[in-house]
Amino acid sequence: MHYKGTAYQNKDYVYFDVDDFHSFGRRASNYRTFFHEMSHAADYSYGQRKCNGNYTTIDYVDKNGNTLNDYLKADVENRIRTEVDEYIEKKNLNLTAEEKKKLEDDVTHLIMNTADYKNDPPKIDDAMTKKCYKSVVFSIKIDLAFNAGEASDVYGGYTGNTVSYWQHDADYWYTTTTDANGNEVPAYDENGDLVRTTKQPLECFAECMAGMITDCDSGMDGYNYYSEDVQNTFNDIASEMAGTN
Image 1 (cartoon, rainbow, N blue to C red):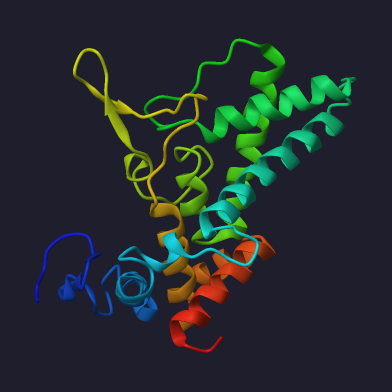
Image 2: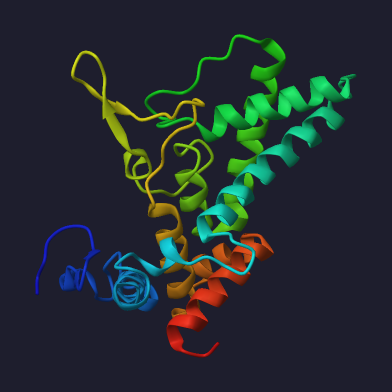
């Protein structure tokens, strides 16, 4: 009952430090943490019955054949590409269509394939790419801080916490492998893309659900910050779990 540590869910159980749920406790505000972890549990429990033993938010596929993870990843990538385009316009860079696309691709790849920005930020040699990268990261971080609520956490989950102000630790979001020296390192696929865990859609669902249940500002700001595709998929999953669609 008086569990000491970070609140979390594991299969059919949720763990809380109840001593932290009081008027001066860091988890007291709207009991958001309670409903966040209970949403993870509901996601797991429903998935055991309906989704081949997986979490609902991982296994769910919409009518277009897309998952919540697909829409979340696209949301983050589209935001980065939009910021690159705005930077090009603001700086009046005279780029060909091919050069513009290359800058978009390079900056997007750098941001979305960083495993841990705090401890291992990317090394960028090209001057224009470096300037654009810094501008895009700064712009998104500022916007997340003021407008995104808990969506900042998931944005961090796709960028090694490059563009996040409130977050889980970076290693929560990616898988690891062992290098030739026996060291545990981030895993990358054959295309050089970071291999992520499945935590991003799980956290999105729990953060949005807790925000709706408690009317917590940070949770609702997060929900409203996401793209329409993300919101619709969240709503469809929640409706299915509730038996209302």
